[in-house]
Length: 267
Image (tube, rainbow, N blue to C red; front, side):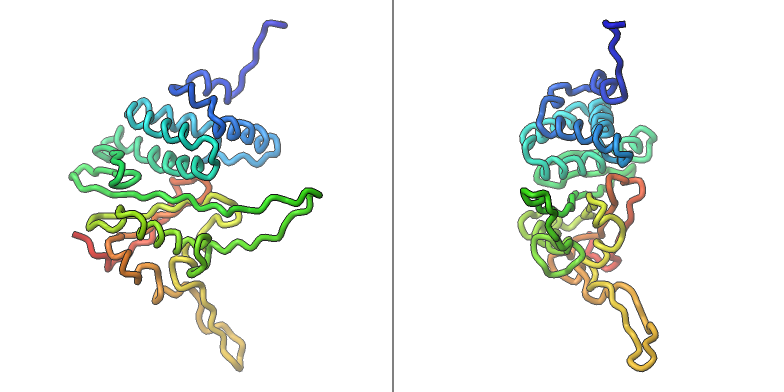
């Protein structure tokens, strides 16, 4: 029995992984450690973890080996940058969701064209959907040396605060890059990658004019409530070629939601 080696789902997937050199990267090592930690704590996210990343990349390798190598190269390049690798993971999640559609004959193909868009999905009729993927996650400050936590205000739901606002992140990317400014079927794909911002509120509040509640002065009763779309991100001239926004939380792309802008200027 001393020579008997046990295995679990992690080692099984590692033994079958098509890109074994990636397992030596810092990001993959950290993700592996966190997998065991959160599983032990009973908090494992079944949609986004170390094992699902290995599965996704194996699926890519089987579908298009060059695409798998492209993602592997990016992971190796940014291996020591946690946030950059988390953003690449977001793209992996989105890409993988369309691989099954290719095998089932619902999608013609998936393209990776640097400088054009993060992911391009080609439909059976030849039309294409251009996806630009964002990973949104607050940068929480580390506790003090004495272990006391620091108070931090999450403001991703705001409209005007630069750096942290989802709206400002989107507008900044449009201004720096040309992908979402071309006359075609463009979608911004946003992953909310933290439990503090998961769900609808952060995206809908930031991209609209905010959630507004109107009360009667005398009665105090609620007269109206909801998101104000009269002052949305789609009113900004830079978004004229965006068809809409796709958003999802914590890796669950199958439960994604759409915000379609019906007045978008499409060719």
